[in-house]
Length: 109
Image (tube, rainbow, N blue to C red):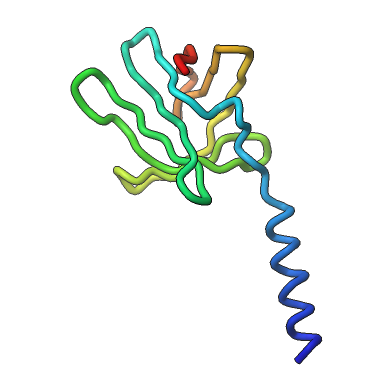
């Protein structure tokens, strides 16, 4: 019984330490020149986002890290994808899914 508990403890700790954390610099409210607002925040044990225009919600979901990229799991539609990103000061650049384009965000708070 002690061996089983030890084995389970090792497996759980290996999984926890193997996961990458979403950088704290990414959290906050961001504005794009297209007039969209992106809010990235912690919700219990996960990081969630909501992207809105002036009139509607465009996307919602969960962010995790995988191999240095943002792994997106959408809540508003059944979709998952990885996005490259870069952050410098108050500027965040995120590639758009299945595209060569990128969003350019400026941090509001």
